[in-house]
Amino acid sequence: MKISTIACLILFAFPILAGDARATDWFVDNQTGDDRFDGKDAASRGGGVGPFKSIARALRAAERGAHIILADTGEPYRESITLQGASHSGLSYQDFRLTGNGAVLDGTAPIPRDAWEPLGQGIWRFSPRRMSHQLLYLDGEPAERVVVSRGELALPDLEPLQWCLFDRQIYFRAEQDRAPGDYSLSLTALPVGITLVDVHRVMISDLTIQGFQLDGINAHDNVFEATLQRLVCQGNARSGISVGGASRVQIQRCLISDNGAAQLRTEDHCVVHLRGCRILDHSAPAIVREGGRIHDDDQDH
Image 1 (spheres, helix red, strand yellow):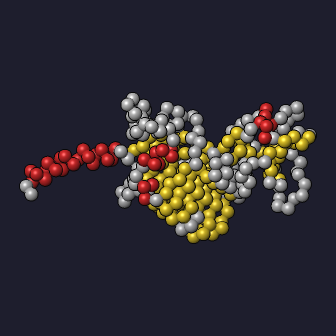
Image 2 (cartoon, helix red, strand yellow; image 1 turned 120 degrees about the vertical axis):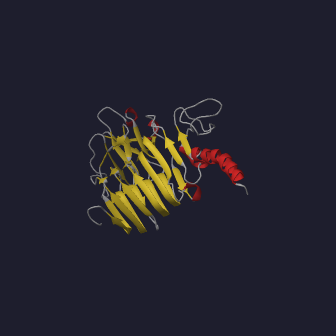
Image 3 (cartoon, helix red, strand yellow; image 1 turned 180 degrees about the vertical axis):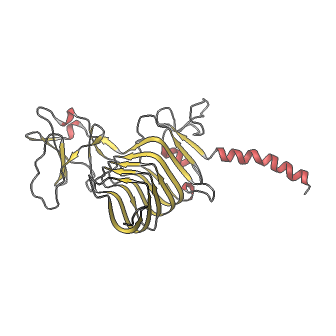
């Protein structure tokens, strides 16, 4: 083949390769986006060009090495998403990335006003659909919980605005002459914020993940070369981050706090590396290990 012919092939191939590179960026905006748009621009340009509305739609469009970019609109993304398999993995030279830009992924749902049963003396009772783990939210923040020990036979004393999980039901004490419907009360409803399974070379960054009934992030199994960076994982009913199976995960500069049973949870044969994280244990133990190994900058757990 002549050199001039090869040069022409390279010249005409280059725009195609460049177009493929641009196509790896997918934009999501839960206020101005639409899942019927093409997802290839951060703003709507007309003619179907513009951001998707949901992260799930971007994940359906994404291929290996893609970059999903969320707009921080001030309104939480209310989804439970899964990254799974080759299409949600990275390439040898490029991670699959989900960048939150400070956005919030929220799993809470409001409790209907008529779902509460009055018991007298300001105590109200509510039976949630999912009971294995649960948190009550008041005005968008985890409400003050009174922990009931296993085997307790009597409802504990509750101060106004406190709650507890007892006999598989939520009990809440309202202030005098007020009812639960007078407050903004919600509970952890969606199961897991982000599930990772059978993926490699994944980076998730700059996102708050809160209000899920189990975990903020669950690296379930076969998750390799994954990095969780600058995340806030808070107010989830079981743990902020759970890592299991044979997964290998790096957690860097994350804040993990106010979760229900553990801030960080590990199991099976996983390996977790911590770098510059703040793990606050005032609501539950900082780390609950049911297997796995954790390596910290300062000490091994």
